[in-house]
Length: 408
Image (tube, rainbow, N blue to C red):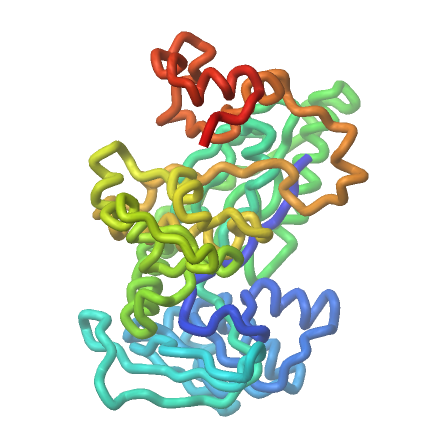
């Protein structure tokens, strides 16, 4: 039974690596479940239901919310809730983006906002600085599907559900017969933020379905209503990825191409589009400097796994949780293709950090053990030399097949 929930979408801006920047889902958890949000003044990015929920709860907890920022011309959330927040002193900055988060070496002390014109270009002279100690990203949520992909469950792209979600039958069973799915990881809807009860009820139904599959109860005890969205709900939620794409364009326009796309590996948006290694390596190659996404497109469809190998974007300790969607959006923008055509970047076990004492008893598959270069293969771009590929005659490949590192 997988009920892994959802996580925040990360859209970077200059300075978003400073302590005090967090996702809305994280902020809600810290304010409710843990009662441990160390904040006094919160600026919220995003005016949809998620952002307005964070603003309302923060005010209830006695925190100041000096600004809610939205790149669109109008607030996206409920008008009644917006008026209630404005009545309590919250100011809405529509048609604005974050130019920079300022502060000391580590912590956020203020944000600089800039107005955007109709083409998402910063308006000269429109900058405004707002004091704050926390910046909350409330742009959107995505289902947490890491375990499902590692388990081999079939995933499909549904923008109105938050992105890639598992295919399930009428009893919440995935394409892997032994795996059932429930809650936000099965796909988001308009109730995901406001009310946890539908997810809880779905979990109970999935549990009954799993029990019925084992013969523990009669199948007719299981009733699983459809989780499909109505046409109106689908129209409301479907533009999510295009909205995120617009947020990314606005952030890059306001902050420049040096905005970090991958915090862990310090890869900027410019480095990613230019397909350059992270700057901390202090290494540049003339052949690589002449390459970019435009040349990679000529080699075949863009793939996040290929970009990970070339730039290290998504290879850090967060395992792509902060940059995965942003990388896909950057690739879609650079390639001029819909984001749903960008393949899902692969997850590697463990999907959460584990101590070596837990990992060591688990041996690697025979294919990995005998052919270590399989670690570096992208299925759509890689033919294993041990399976008769003509590249197997290359010295490096033959050395790899024997388990010996090829000559440098």
